[in-house]
Length: 549
Figure 1 (spheres, helix red, strand yellow):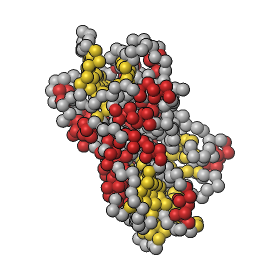
Figure 2: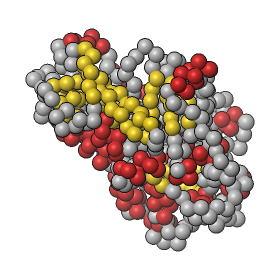
Figure 3: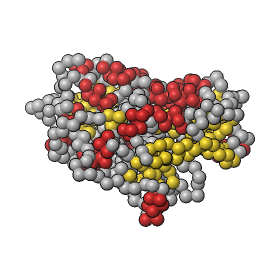
Figure 4: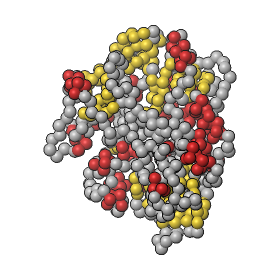
């Protein structure tokens, strides 16, 4: 069985370096010239078609020990895939290796998940030597750029005259409708920790995100609350961490940040009195959760978010003091569960948000918290990464792209100021003098954020009073395809039935028309996308842009 075709990355594996494939091995079955297969990290969309028939017996796989262990522990690959990499030699980061005379490579650690690397290929075999950098998935935050700027294997390209002929760049940001700035992960985690601290004793928090790369959140929670909390990991997550910890991780991998320091995670602690209890991963003992609720102890879910605006975060995802916040109206549902309702003025109508809360004295506590956290870069962060090389990059190829990004003319010339672009030539993307607009949802005044983005999310649930507010983008490198909303699904929007459309129309929602000459971005001001939780649920998203105002 091949890997899932609806992958996050759209990169097809081939590079300008002959006989090399990276992160997608579909071509391996049909090209007998392929000798070397690189795997940048252990998310399943980056080792697609690992089980295809080999063209010959000399195919060599290149990856880190950590990535090998993570794939072997994964529930996704079949036995053929696992056996193919089980007994191979693995490689250390920041060391230069030779594949054959005049063809060398370096694995450079990056910030995405445990064991993830960039791949630097140095090919001196032809008349024109080629230097190629494949970033894999990466978050190029300011602290990461600081680490990379001192990396001795990149020094000649950053501080000298060395040329990178082509960079295969993580452009995951391109699946969104807008270019947005993303909150720094350290800031997002600290906001979460500060919010947790406001909850009463005996609260249980479920950190349900368990894809590789979220270990940093577990680690920070343990460090912050280790003296007043207990915790547990679900079996699958515990096994994954134990397997990686069973081998000595290359210390060089730790240069980027704590993502690879999962050896510091404490998997067990002694039963004792505690203020908080944390469950990492999906709970396996549902009866314990139900018992907590029955005893009037709070059970709070924590999920990550990327494009949640600052206004929404502090309006809906922090505790509310009902004596000072009179915007919310609260209705008692059952036990300590309350429904908080707030009306927000959007253009010519009031839109109603509804959220479930717990109540203790005069304070209402959200039943779900958000952690602003992303393992992929924003557009502005990728540009800072490219600028790190001070013009020593000839060309850039996007690793995530599609009709949506091309329709917005997000070509490499326009985004990164290149003089030439093979990608732009292939898709005949035209020169565009229109400035690149980047939305900052956190450091602008709230009125400006609201007027520019104007995004409303309302979940219409049959048989349920509670609507989920602030449905946000999520990182979707997910080996089980357990996706709420993200780049797998964004280009395959489902349309509602006539009955459901009539219901939405009665509530005041209409499809927008576009005046002649207006931006294509305004043509779908009201759209419908399918929610995976129930087939009868629909998310209605209204998007308003500057040109539509």
